Image (cartoon, rainbow, N blue to C red; front, side, top):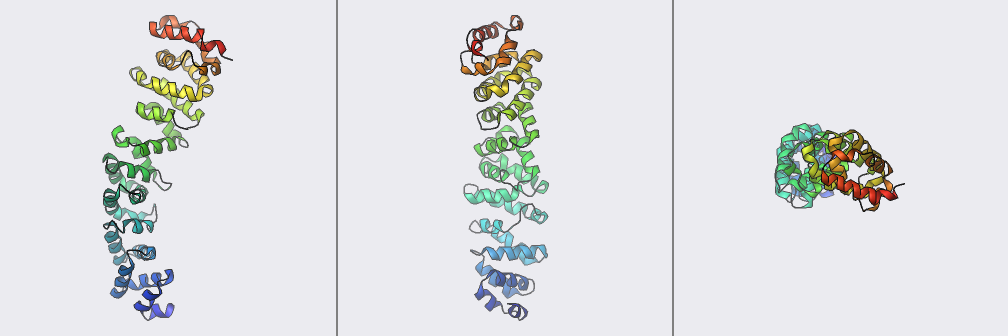
Length: 314
């Protein structure tokens, strides 16, 4: 193999076709046009060609960059080329435009998600490109597939929360946010204080751990404007249905200390449901007599809860 490379025996190396031979061809391609031609002949199916091409990019050999730009512009090769490009590598930034265009062309298939994952891994240098793909409904799903991949940058994840609600209106985007909420406290805070009610509702119905769901509601009921509470009643109801034990102390505390949230909480409680049996603290606070200052509808709901569900609270 070394002799063939030393002698610039392009044909022999191409005939061998092993990873080592393709790597040797890649080194020769820096100075030997025939080696570039041999690599191009294999570029439609051989991943090793693109591995060699990326090594050329790291050496600043022009043929490597040219090959990647060509492949990313070809729907039949873009996925293969992207597989060889290391995620989160600083050398990806110059290819951001090519990768974005490939996402646009291939968004409907699996390859679109792979390419979007590559784009999402670049970081701040691809901020505008990621935002454009989220805003575009044709590429939104693929872009969120990419943001959900392990190598997605913090910038891409943050952008998903920062765009307008319409730009994350896709099931995959919603799943991304819920997955992030499972491990990132800053996402819990955002869901509690600023996320749209539809996303809060999806989170309430998800498998997010109940203690983390409780953090969202503690934030939402104490920091959001009272005018937004009507839209939160249904999500809170779904949360109570799934996590009544974990929400009991939180809701009891909010009922006692945040009067403006009482109407929302009371309307979310099913006075005839079995959840109140697990909500002793909430029922205790409801009995404390503050209902006299609430609306007739809220007073009626409290009376029903005390007469039915709270009777079984333990």
